Image (cartoon, rainbow, N blue to C red):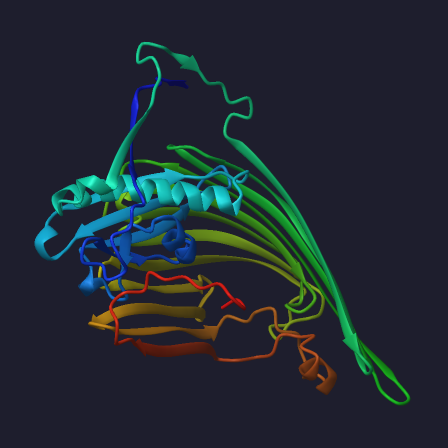
Length: 409
């Protein structure tokens, strides 16, 4: 891959302060989950940071997606408001797994400074802007070779131990990933293993609980167009808790996105269809009197996600069943909302509901009291759900630019 150095114009907002009342400062609302807002306020002191988007001259929204290098791509959406209405912009920046948290947040600030320059000028705050140049020879060429050819390798390991007089617990887990992501291909593979042992001490007895599991996943996805993709997914899973000696699945799939993939940080509506085969070998005989079987299944789902100034919404509906018996099926509903309904008031809700009729690995016979209390065995159920909701309302001073780090948060 060849890159061409060019002269880069950096617009750095000078930090000459015009008072904390914000009368001569650009009013900005920062909307992000992946940034250090205290650090931004301490570094970019020539701005006034307001508590609600409707009070701002500029609403800055930051969203993030993982990159193939193990880092993140951050997309900054700038929305002009009030007298700056209609002046919008989008900038992006990328990080890799070698970047420290401090390097990431400084890159975020530099990108934010670049995006805010036009709004500073429009508001007449040119005296708060300084210019500097980082240069290069526009005619020069630099040959950049990637000796790894976009392959990224990750290894991780974890261990923990805790206890008290009548209980102790020990756990280890670890795995590795090998991934390659390009514009045309997305290849991901990984192995994870987990082992946990708990001891419960009674006056005359000790009860031991052991849970261990292993996963292997390999997938390859090919971009067909700006709306279509195809993929092949394979996985192998073993778990005492789920009664699987081996759960081996091979699944071809096709996906259609109603919006171009290039807009995925902003909006998505994706339909995914999968059809595949699954071979199961069990530790114990199942409720269907099987120790081993191979089954065909299909899966259809639709998922949507939108990021807007007023908040975000995401949700999905997926359904699957086995071909030999459509009554063995599962339907899953997921919803997440984070809405700014009016000035100072935000409401959030999220939840998941699964209608479960496909527990083909359940062991024959009743679970013991020990299995239930120690969660050593999957239990029969027809549904599973969780939900949470909440709201916040803020009023008072519109400015929140002061940072006081004493005694922490």
